[in-house]
Amino acid sequence: MVEAAVPGVKPEEIDVQVSGNVLTLKGERKEEKKKEKASYIYQKRSFGSFTRSVTLPTEVDVDKAKAEFEHGVLTLTLPKSEIVKPKTIKITTK
Image: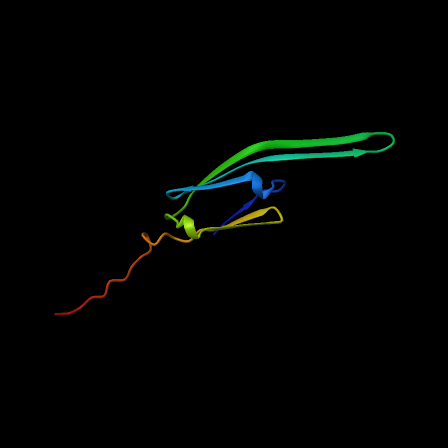
């Protein structure tokens, strides 16, 4: 499971990619606030793009991955790939 705080970014503006065992998050933040009063105008703009890559401890099964976004936090559930899951081999005696 991976959690990423991405305040001010809409879920559709986030790109999530997995290649091998590397998870990459890309996005762009665009925010503009404007307040007008009788004697002044307050305007604030913040924007910029970001890219973060994280090396995962093992390869993941992308087809079973889930992504949820709530209150500025992106939560990714990335199950291990069946290929890399440990398998038990029974020992038989002769």
